[in-house]
Figure 1 (cartoon, rainbow, N blue to C red):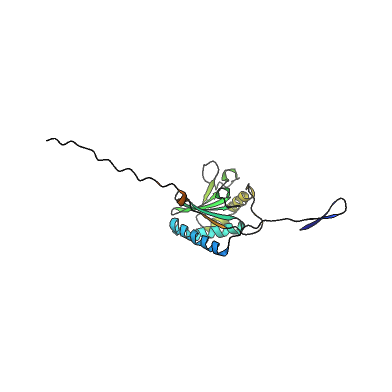
Figure 2: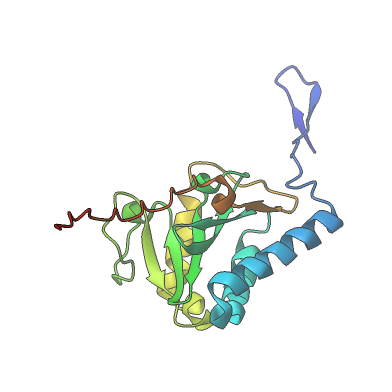
Length: 190
């Protein structure tokens, strides 16, 4: 709260109202965390520690971010978003049995003098995560800071983000079973 003097000599009080980041209960958070561990174990059990270290580091930088967790094309994804929509996320961790990557949603727009960002898509770029120490590299930290600064949707200033599970596999359309091969009819001659 700040007090400001108007030209007329009166004082006016300006109050900054901030919306709390999350109303997720402790029980709901524990349940969501258990689901996250199950998904990681399903897709990337060998990378459990690395994913945990990356999450801790990104939560430290973005304490009000919502972690939107989902499966996407056979991968496990955690998007760090200013709201509960994963597509508005700034950064995302994508993991599978083959490795862990850090995605920058608007990576194509970021200055990358060290040429760390990989990918050729219309928007996103990625960094292969060899270990948790990759995040501590100055060039990577600079990219993360730049991505946060350039984000179009601002993060809440106070509060704590929630963990939101969006299971894409439940929403995917069931695939039809492959048609059975037809038996060829051969004519018997007698």
